[in-house]
Length: 318
Image (cartoon, rainbow, N blue to C red):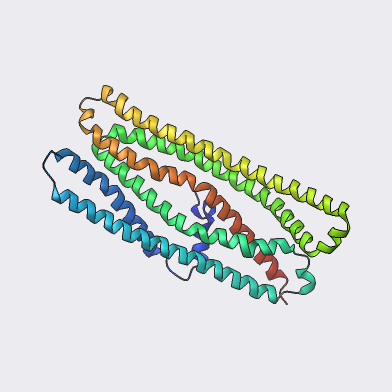
């Protein structure tokens, strides 16, 4: 799988950012390791927990991990947000420069709404995708290390988890491709809505005089806006359903580990509490990965529109 093609925000970062993403990736990785290590600390503490006894070692470890995690989280979110805004600013400045140097006659052939949407909606969509990108990296690390922990405790449970997660991710990726196509179709109708709003503003006096034309334009605007709504709803609703099914699927996975495997494997129940804790840590990041698919589909669409406009401007430079 080509990650640059599936999540084009990665390619955009490599191309547009003046800063290296290595430190942010390392911090995302560290956060994932810290979060996964909480499983071991919690399981260790639960084994020796007793009335009237406080294990200071595990308490200090737990406090240390949470403190470092919060510090890393604050830095990661702040830095990734700044990087996203810097890239959006760089794109707007570069396109503005090409815009002012373009041939006026040729520039008139480009739909103004396409330009407005790139400068406003699309660059904002791109900027807002970066914090989510690095949080997804952290979630993937949590899943990987949690699975390693599960493998240490029980290989049968590990293979059950690995197969279940792989099947779930295949469904998610298929859904991501469908959303990408639907959002591209929605863009055309969004552009028409923008054009109509522009016509209302610029032709306000004429529309006030000509009520028939006013009503026709309003009907067209409502029709196109409805098309945008229906396309986006039809694109995202399958992901909502898939997220629900995935959660059900993951809880069935927990049920298999808790109720089925102990009856099939001798001594399996000895590690059952630890396995249950590990599985409960795996589910949230997996759900977040699935929930990020519409976000990255939107950013893919926005990136395509930015570079499409830039290519058009490159051809009409004076």
